[in-house]
Length: 385
Image (cartoon, rainbow, N blue to C red; front, top):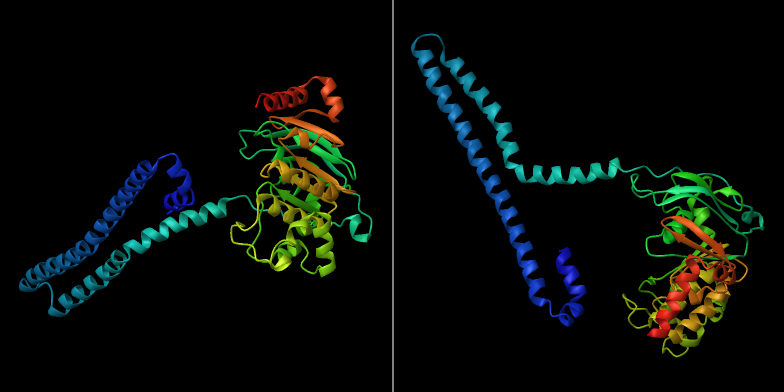
């Protein structure tokens, strides 16, 4: 099923590269393997029941012959023979029942393995009960990483002894090669994963002491892959704040330039978005996700490659919308296009899970370190192209 789904969803690419034959051959191979395994299982299951019936009948024969000899020699009565026959039936009947359920037992064993894998997984850390100052009307949005260590695999540490402070209202850009730990860092702030050592604080409160709902209620997120559900544009904007009024939704749309293209749609804000968002451009979908984050009014904002999937013309509009969104709130911006984060208050360069440099754009260029090399390589490639 996974192979068929993958091939169908990427059928255009398969045709472009002329790989239909290879895809068909791979499907035939997998189908033949499945048939062989299924046939073997059914064959074994088909043999078990007749075998158990044969064994049961053989028991009757053995009991009948032995008891007949014992009766003829006077060592057993007919009543004893009848008892032995009944005992034999009671012994073989459960075995026959188990044999008839062979397929169900095999399926149950496979399901049990998956269940035990889930049971063996690490338990989620219990919810804390601390509160934030923001709940009393004062919120700052200061985030501090204090000697944080984390790994997906205990034998391969990813982030080791990392310390970083994002001041209230500051825009912190995180750059570095793929696999450096940039996205992992912000996922730790959201508590999608639990850190192995150290601590992360929000406004001085350890995030492990906060209920996850309270913590995530302070954070807005705009990702590279836009997620929109099959409702109206209005519903998608209000997704993070279901009780928002019409005026609040429209204000968020105007602030993030969604209003500009919505008026060109026949149904306006009541336009229903297709399941895959195909009736909107990539830039329009991105603007809607920015408006959604804007409406929630978070203390902390995370932007993960938010402009990488839009064209150059739309990128300027998205940048302006994100600038409005970042205003007066702490922001973490993950970007590969260094041209989009030159105005960041702090740029953090990560390599192999560690911070190798940090400073402003100008400071890092003067330092002639990893950032300067990365920046010049990008613009040299752009000029060459």
